[in-house]
Length: 204
Image (cartoon, rainbow, N blue to C red):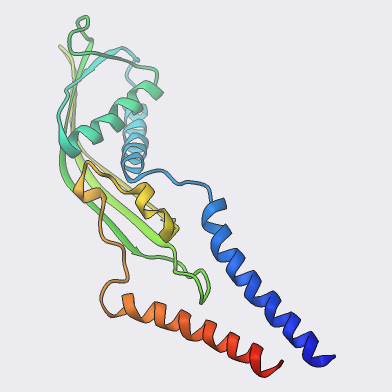
């Protein structure tokens, strides 16, 4: 009777580990992609600046560029719209204000995040830091300043393919755990599972 109880307990543990390992990544809410993280982070910083300038919301033309600078401009555009401004197209009517954006520094990395238990890989920590030079001007007003932006969050290792950018290499960094640790983690998991199976059979 005792042996049977032990077998049932071990089966329950093994089943729970397997089920949780498969279901947790599936049920987890999808995080913002790396591109969305940049846009959202820049937007928050620029929105705070716009509020501090206390300008009357008007029509604004934002200079367009390509590459990462263009992605940052999407965040600037979002901030002006959220602040009640009307963002014009290049060939639209004459704007009240002109805005130019230059990305002066940018850093985006994956780092090892919090532990998720011995049998699960840890969270991946996303760290974003950057700075832009922003110019807002009209016929009688001219603001020029450096604006810093930063953001940090954690995602599941299984979500890295979803969040990675296919357009910007800097937004698709390598996952942490390369080198020796890349091989030690699977070995540790295999040894643990093997130990549980061994305990199951010796208690039959």
